[in-house]
Amino acid sequence: PKINISSAGTEDSPSLTVWPEVHDYLNMKGLDISNHRRRTLSKEIVESSDLIITMSTDHQAYLKKYFGIKTPLFSEVSGYGKKPLFDVTDIFQPDECHSKAAVEHIHSILDEIILHISKLSCRLHKYL
Image (cartoon, rainbow, N blue to C red; front, side, top):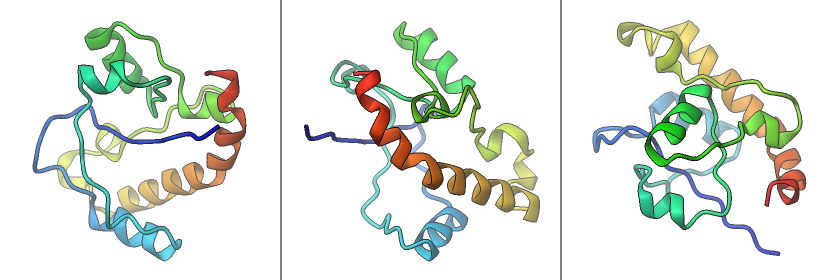
């Protein structure tokens, strides 16, 4: 069966865009995100989704609080345990978010997602 995957953020701010560090790194990995358009998670998106996968425990708490639903972590659905993937803003102060350490964190999270995405696609049937 055909699977449609989309993304939506929990923060509603039109100024939020893909950071250059993310865009450039994904481009270097051969992934074109030039058509990406930011969306904020809404009731309509939640209700039209068969499965919502969260990256971090903060995301899980948000979905539980605002939409009353329990969601699995990306790592759980991918089959490698309950490992939250924290946003750079979760672990770095605002003035440090583009530091060398922050960029390295961003790259490690992107590498982890890229590494496990094929496992996720093979395991989705267990959650649908």
